[in-house]
Every structure is written in C-alpha cells, then in structure tokens.
Length: 182
View 1 (cartoon, rainbow, N blue to C red):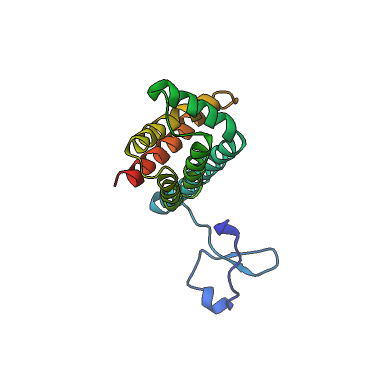
View 2 (tube, helix red, strand yellow):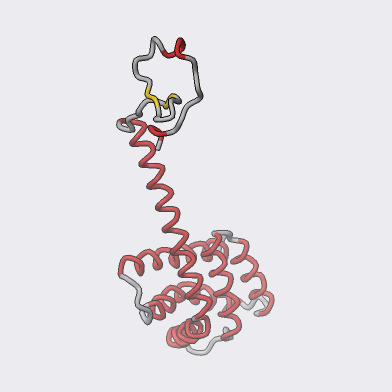
C-alpha cells in the first residue's frame, strides 16, 4: 500500500519541520499515511472498475469465441436450417456459412472488421456476385444471432452471461451489415 512504502533516507535536520514523519522498526523514514478518499480514491476506484469491466469483456469474448469454434458445425447446421425455413432453396451451403462464421468469430475476438470484409469478399467471388444469393447472405447475417443463441442455450450459461454474449453477437451482426452494405 502507499502508506507502507519506504521513502528515501533523509537527515534528522531535514525532518525537523515535518511533524508527520514515521520511522520503521529499522530506523528508516517511511512516507506518511495517505488517505485515499475524495477525488483520488474515486478516480482509483473508477480506474479499477474500468479494468474489471475490460477483463470481463475479454473473458466473454474468449468464451464466445471458444463456443463458436467448438460448436461450429452445430451452429452452421442450425443456421442453414433457419435460412431454408425462411427462403426455401438457396445457393448458400455449409461451407459458405462456415467461412462467414469464421469471419464473424474473428471479429468478435479482436473487433477488427477486416476479417468480416475478407469473408464477404471471398463469398461474393464464390457466389459470382449473384444478387439473389447476396440477398440471402443479408438474411443469413440476421439469422446468425438466432442460430448462435439456440446453440448457446444448450450450454449451462448463466442468464447474465447469455445477455452479454448475445450483445457481442449482435454487435458482430451489426458490423457485418455495415461491411456488407456500406
């Protein structure tokens, strides 16, 4: 703590005007006790809370990334089923959804839209820029969140974590929409 950190040794004459000096058991001077209340304490608490929230956000991103990696096949199956229920036949297949999901997963872990942009570029080239399929891709992005949530419910995840993970997925979907429709 700040109150128990040793200070540099100064001579007796230098401390004569300072009645608040303390000595350690070895005779060396210690810094005076410091109260951390008021602005300083509040600022330190806010910083600590900020680090705590950052750590929690990082943990949630890692958890979601791990689930997206481990359950990739299941998520893509649910996702493709949902797309078929909405539009019937589509040129999108499992490999397209896997590619898109990896881009979204990479975005979730490092919040860099380049992964999503690269996935879309590859998909558009594979799909030969077909307007109907690109529309199906738009729909697929919106249905991603539903598929992920369905698979997340299969795990024993606490409700407040589910809410936080859902927010991360929603943010990834919004980023993907922004990249696909600038």
